[in-house]
Length: 313
Length: 313
Image (tube, rainbow over all chains, first blue to last red; front, top):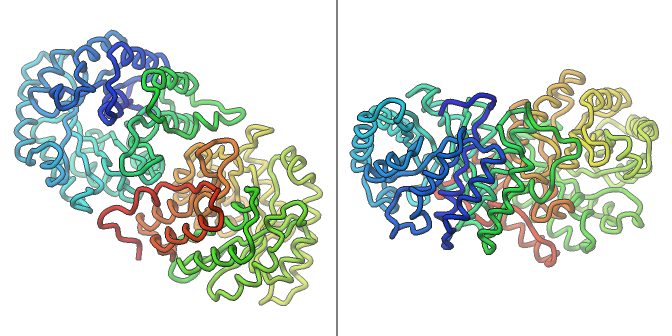
């Protein structure tokens, strides 16, 4: 998305969606709200607060509408939600989401297994959502991101051809998405690949239409891939507080990159995130209190800030 | 150092020195030899096998002479050793080390605390070592690296001025070092700083005289800093199998970056290390058998290689 004033890099917090959907415990609505409020107090500018999926599929996120409505009370916060289809998009619009993200798996095998949809079926939903959005008055229209998952490789198909990802990006834009995000769902990405694939997508659809990466830390390369992304102009990175949800394939590894480590790195590099790292680390307590049995990840919270550390700006 | 044929990046294994000196257990000589042999079998081209310090200071490394003599039997392996002073350098030369590394802490406070030496006293040792080396026939002269520790910040002094690191690099070269290495002893480095400081040192002494980085993963930025180093032409990275020794300040964090994750990343990027990642992961078993009570780190060994993974070359 377009960057807000006073920040260089947008850290988009996806813990309330991606983290919470990956664990079996259900966080009560009041505690979600407390956590989101703590994140906002730390300066977080965008939060993916939930997903509009049937409650029987993801009971952990059944209260997403209520959460969106609460989050919208924070002026200056950009409230995002995931939607699997047009029905979810309508619910997101009704609740007031400012950004809706629809995932499409580059690997069609993965798409069939996880979403039980072919690419063609997902394209139909994208077109329908674009129609819903175009009927809205301009000021009330949420941004619409097509998020290409398994973009860097698939645990079922293996390598995913870069041309596939480029072609899907073009197709999603043609169907009415405003922007494209690339997701390393499987933790397969490496820095050289990140640079190569981002450049290829930029060439195809324009660098201002693909500004966001969703990276995992499965093999410890999460922040290395962020550095590669920065080299090719990426300005939005998804991350999850405490790496909530972990990675089922790698004990000890977070799934999503850890917000605390990402913010520490960016600010140390002189890139303003708008986030106060100390307050962000404080917000872990809110999360830990709500989910005492979930392990939280991150190196910076344990190691502490360097002596004489000064954030960007 | 100059790169060997057939490789793009040299991964210099420092576990037998930096890892073993950081733990209280003493690995028996026979087991060190077995571990080194397993590393060589995996394709590791350079190993820092020990340190020539008084046995009463570091009993873990008391057998360094014997280990150097054993390691030298491996044709194609570059055998490195740390030396704190001219006396240690003479012992390293006598044992047949092919590279000797003398550490100098950029922070003089840290130098006084850790080595009980002022900068001036370390300079005297450097000059004396250079004298020893110049008396040797050319073919028998080990490479002489001046390794600037706390180059990216100090836990006692805080920020370390870049001019200090540049000036120390120039001084060490003037006194007779062949090359300079920079060490992030404290895990303070960030990717922007890595690029800036490496460029500054390159400008001062020549890019062919500063090719190596020694990075820690204290705050999870180890591999991110490697990517930054690659961007500015660094071609040698120290790493430690299993991150042996850990980081005393950050439970759950390796001290040195983990060799397995580094090799996985570099090879995935298409950069040849000469190391077979699967055999390297196998070598962990030798290490774990010798030190059953020490935690080993690394994400790639737990997560496994990506489906369809193909190494460089």
